[in-house]
Image 1 (cartoon, helix red, strand yellow):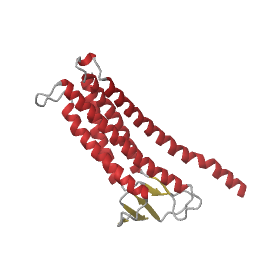
Image 2: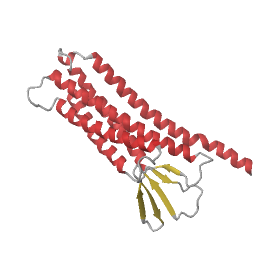
Image 3: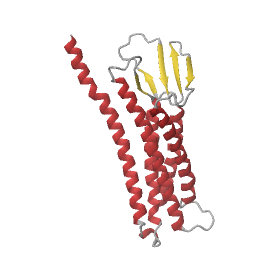
Image 4: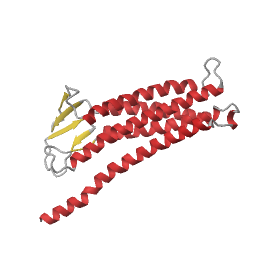
Length: 239
């Protein structure tokens, strides 16, 4: 059973790394809203690297952000966090591969392989946390600007890249948690024993990652719904 859990966690880590990479390069981190517009002749969308405009004929023109220091602070931080998340994910896959029970490399003992696999799980969870923070922070700023009455210009909504990031982060945290189940083999007594400190910290980190993911989704969803009743009241009062 532990072998199946570790293999499943390793596969989830691979998938999460690919999804996180797809989220990083996705063009649609935020997209201009069509709410209240009858004719849409121009659509704008942005990610962490460039801003694009697409006309009604489907022809898009993109402009890269030329200056790093001129970017908003949250965009700079999200860039760094996403890259760190991918590095954590890559390290997690390499380390976890060496610690899987079904992989035999050299004369490594079961106890050592279990600790290696658990380390890979912790790296995967840390990568997922970095991704959650990045996409949630970016989403918060998009929602905040959308409902800001003093923000002029075009309004933006959440794009596909953010949802890919949330999905990749969830897979990374869950896969890391499954890899941490290898801590059961870290005890000299074998399958009957547990490395209590390592297992405890693994469960704490995994639980914290899942809670952050759920909290981020609930927060964004609450921000989306909270303003709508007040907007309706303002609209009736004006009439």
